[in-house]
Length: 341
Image (cartoon, rainbow, N blue to C red; front, side, top):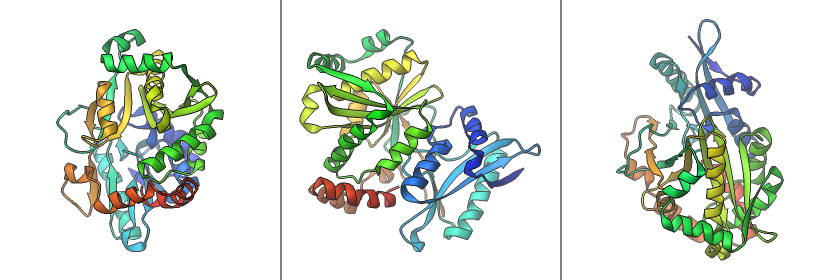
């Protein structure tokens, strides 16, 4: 068994291995590496384990992140809700972990942190961070019947208000204009445009940009990805003044209908904190929490409640960010986001 760093030039073999693992995520694919490198200039260390025949048997994507030397760490993966290692056997997993710890010892004082793949079984009582997933039926009609009346009514409302949905890579600039304003309203620095354009250009068959339109005006947008039998809504944004028209509900209906039509078995609404407004929205669709756990070195006992909490410092920053002029928030945010992986 040999563990070594894998260059981006090995993307085809890496992505093929990732696709072969049922627990893998879109974020494991090499395109995430390219997007983070292009947008933030972070240094990647993608570890690969190969057997005696040179065939890939495990992978662990890592980035060296941190604002200063004393706080640097290896992370799997920045700006992704989950990642971690993939391996054929526990022995290979241990070899990858050992290789990563050796690398962390040389680069950043042994500090390493990775967010694991979602637990395969849901846990409605989980008190920490989770990704919210909905098993999809075989038909869109069955999905519609399974919705709460509130969800059906909001979706119909969008249609009656004349909201329509368009899709296409060419809509990405329009999506970004909605996204940057929405992020300012949330008090969160946005990713720079190159982050999204890198993903869209490198994975045109797996990434879809959708816009909800009122006439010719974009009023909400979604970027979703497809990996295996899971469709994931990774980013969803809307203009607050149009929320009464329920454009986001129509975006979700179109996204889930398309997922069913193309053979997806699960719809992932993304990561959420218990009790938060976006999490309540996901639960109304019937989504169930799948726990997200993390591994930290030097070892720190898991505390899912503390991990889901927002620090007082970040609450203050978020509150102040909402009052910045939009051009200032966008310009500063592109630099600040690097340090919020």
